[in-house]
Image 1 (cartoon, rainbow, N blue to C red):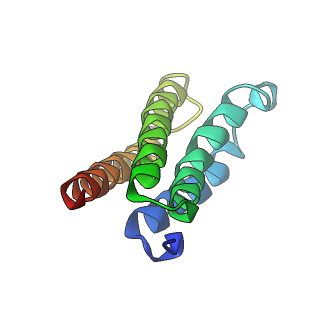
Image 2 (image 1 turned 90 degrees about the vertical axis):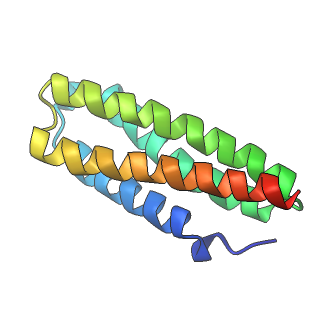
Length: 119
């Protein structure tokens, strides 16, 4: 069992969740059960899956949960783009947040690659 809090990818993903919660607070009220909820769910799914994978007994389990986290980052990436195009997010908020999501994807990919090579 690994302590997920020690993983840089978890720390970065957790920061993304906090940023998503902060920026979606200003979305239109009619989106509370739509885009706001979907983005928050996708964002929080990333560190949740990392944490759950670390709590499992094997690197194979961890890889499987990292793959789920990767799917959630792709989902969030699209939701951020859509939110920007709908003008719920300004480009100045969208750009750095999206860069952070892309960075999390790269970190997840690197960790999955490392786990595969250790196997």
